[in-house]
Picture 1 (spheres, rainbow, N blue to C red):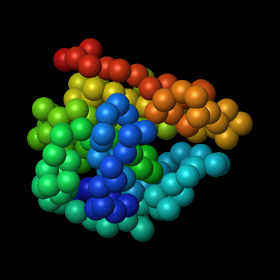
Picture 2 (cartoon, helix red, strand yellow):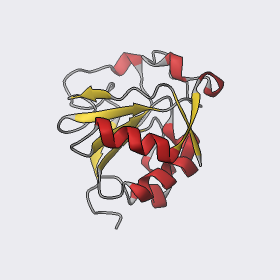
Picture 3 (cartoon, rainbow, N blue to C red):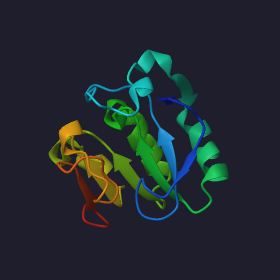
Picture 4 (tube, rainbow, N blue to C red):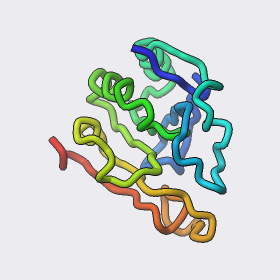
Length: 148
């Protein structure tokens, strides 16, 4: 199964979820928030196609602590590829950043997540005071084992 990435480079982050995490940027977005800081991820045709198993090998090499945040773009555009990946790395600490609402995330994806950031980015509500979000309307939710 294929997945479309913005880049195979795994960013290391302290601000995209709890702890030191790898961040994987998927390509393609259906939301196109006005003040998005990742506009280069919007057009899915500008990404590069990888086999999910190849991406997992890249993750294993670059994210030794098994803490990964999936961002974009909008990762839910590639739900099937995400689900396939999550089934394989199910023992990882997985966080998903989506601009959609929690109720829009399929339960079969939620069950693999420890954390999720939901909600559109709204420039007028921009904040740096709340960890792991960009605007105060967004929510960072600890799921843990809630959906098991």
